[in-house]
Length: 197
Image 1: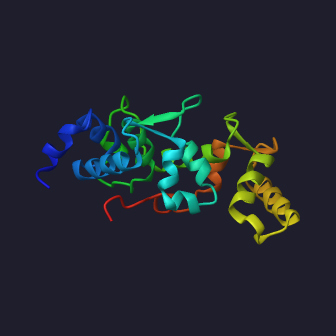
Image 2 (image 1 turned 30 degrees about the vertical axis):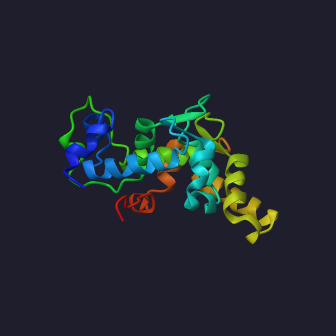
C-alpha cells in the first residue's frame, strides 16, 4: 500500500483533519476509501441516499437519525471533512490525548465523553431547542423498541425517564440533566467503533 503519508496526499487537508480528529493516517486513508465507495456518482460529496449502502445503519432502529447527524441544517450533502468530523465522535477515547495536554484555546476532542454525550443528545433533541421533551423521548423509544412493548409501556418508560433525569422539573431533559443521568454509563465504550477492524 505504500507509506501512510503518501497515501494521504490525495486527501484534501489530511494533516489538518488528523490533527483535529485524532485519526491516524491509516484511519484517514481507510475513511477516504469508504467515502469514495459510498460516493457512487463520484461527486466528492454524499447525499442521504448514499448512506443507504451502509447495512449497519439500515438495520439500526435510529439509523435515520444517525444519518441525519451528518448533515448540517438545510444541507443535503456532506463533504469528506464533515464526514470525518462526525465519525470522530465514534473514535475510541485516546488516553494520550487528554485534556491536560491541551491549552484552553483548543476545542475538546470529538471523541471526549462530553462530545459523545452532546452527539447522542442531539439524536433525541430533534427540534434543537436544547431540551429533550417527552414526545422526543417517545419518538426514540418507539423507534428502538418498535413492537416489543405496548404504547402504555412506552409512555411509562418515558414518564419514569423524565422523572429521574429532570432535576429542574420543567418536564424536559436538558443537556446537563442528560449528562448527569448517564454518569455511570460507559459512554466511551458504547459510542466507540474500531475503524480498521
